[in-house]
Length: 286
Length: 335
Image (cartoon, rainbow over all chains, first blue to last red; front, side, top):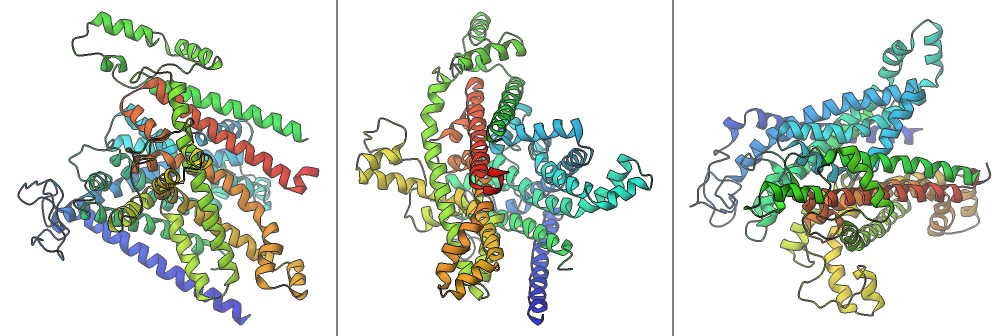
């Protein structure tokens, strides 16, 4: 038995550090995004053709004030990464939440009400699963035009199935349990049971999915910027910077490296947050 | 029982494909701007535009256009690309082999890497190495193929330029191929020089696609192995005096592999979907890269053809996996 408790303690400790690291990075990012004008050393849009492709500070030829170097138009990489966090976080929070609400609602209805509601929603999920998601999102942006609203709309349209699929399965499993039957015997209606009994029990799953979805939303935005279909080309976005960095990777690797590392850490942080929360909700570990 | 199931599955697959066709058809016809006007020279008259619009059938109502398109498809005619003016079917089938080769190579790599990780993790369970494998798995799982592709470009294309990071084959090479399956045909023709060049181009994009799937396989297979290792028959084979390696690969693995197999099927469709952006990243001349160009050029018939083809591939993979599962799982076969 001692063996088991030790193992549990180790897992718990690891979850703790993971949650702290992930939360710390996301808080830092949020602060940088909110106070971007105060934190950014340069104007992210200012071009200076005398200061193009400056290397980061530790390399020879670096210029003070341009810590992470400049791109081919002489714009400061660090300032653009900081301002890029604004768009990334707005997309993550807004698109993630709307997708979560719509997808979970549909999944809950399909899983608990069953019947023709389930039939229609399940068929829709099947159809959605047959689309390549990246191509679908590029297609949607081409149709509704670029811009922040379009990106959010595209993410909601494509990713609702992620929530609907999982929540439907969970709601079905919960619906078969005794407490649901006793709630109905006690006089709760179908909708009442769904919202008061089933929903609280699938909520932990929904929260975990939501954090994962936020990471996915950041990636989708980056991919759309990369294909040059996101916001206007001037606004600093991580994906836009990556596209530019990919094109000039042999001349100025830093234009690609820094937004890429930021994106890496952000996606990792969102998923570790999700994993950490999942373990927190796990009754065995609690 | 088996046949009933098969027919029912084919029925739902057909419904799914029709649904996909309808949605794509409607969505791309909401695109603002007349795609035909863009392909004419600046001096074209209104009458020219109208004539060309009628030629592509774009002057009719959307339901009428859909019926014409479906009729064509049933005769193997997917329309004509607006930008290249070649039949869509020829264009799409010309690019399909490149994408299939890339996806299959990625799948093989994912199974190899993920399988090795799971077996090594099980063999070394309880040690620091197991923890390291778990952490690596977790990281590989949370970062998508797009970012892995960029990281690989930086590492093996720029910092240590050992692999090609652009295109499918070195452009100056003369290709004797009659099919689009360069990777297989170069082997078949014993042209190992060409084969090496093609592999060097494919390795990085394939690895980018493989890493997330490898992590999923690694995690799930290790989990199932862990459960199987506690079963009585495994303990029995150990008391018979078999070594740990034999016990894991010969006794535990065959029983632990089924859940992983089903999952790989579903995840394989996600991998194929990932080729769209990864091909773009590595300028690999496959279907996905052509699809993005088609969207940018507003080539409606071509977009339609590519999306339908992807949907056919996805549903076919799912169908095969379902049937395989029924065949491989003795409980389902007899029940």
